[in-house]
Length: 136
Image (cartoon, rainbow, N blue to C red):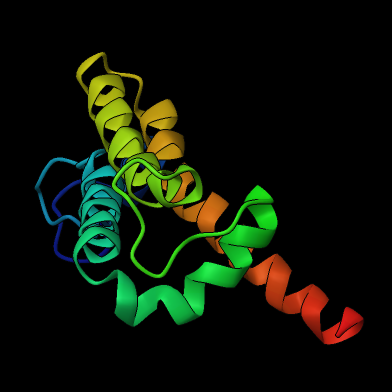
């Protein structure tokens, strides 16, 4: 007795372990660096915006970063002024460190290093806006 279109008995077919897998990649290899590349682009873009468009984004980032760093940022900051240098160097250093970790095949550590600058900056801004509602 056969089951379906196969010519072998259904008991033999069910005794074998045939796994059916569904892949979102459709035969392509999994790319472990996709998140790292995305975050590297986001980090470098953020650093470029901080360097070249500081007057436009100062209203959003100036006060939270000044409170977190306990130092103010001028309206036209110097290239190496303390809190300002954190806003452009941290994303670039995070992307560079993530690239080095990727080259040494430490993919989980590379993901952490790529996301760390965004986490720190978003935490400082979010924490300031959260607390300013309670202590203002």
